[in-house]
Image (tube, rainbow, N blue to C red; front, side, top):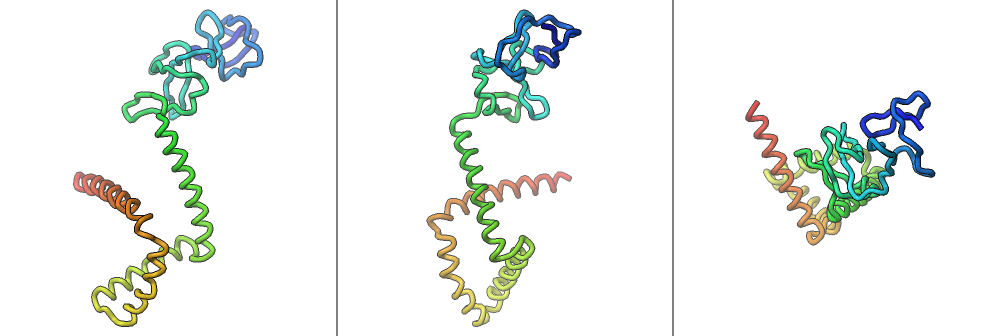
Length: 194
């Protein structure tokens, strides 16, 4: 069997190929096959792979290729590869996998909440307008404290306390404020350095 190769990756099988690769294993997809210079190897049979990241996509190799890193891993772990900011490639930890799964579930819940609220409080424009009106009312109340606004805010307090119980939101709000502060510090530093 002849093939055209890109490094150890078999790009095409053809009678006019540039390299004799021998027989292919049966019932194995081409995405799992590599040619190491002597024989065709099924990535699934290895305990380590040479991995590099190209445009955000991980390439798996059986030989060292430029920019690749040797990773002790089985082929089935390829979906949990991760590239650090410094370019180091590694497998995600169990905690990172758990966190990603939880984040995905949280996002699904937020989408469901958004759909539910959209029918009741409107789209983002209406929500933004409602929030702006509430902020304006708070400004007037803080400065002038008219009884009508005082009574209005008193009537909202039970709903607010039920919607945002402190025991459920305290840590979330603390973390959100910390993240906001860090983001704003970075923003101000970048603006100051313009």
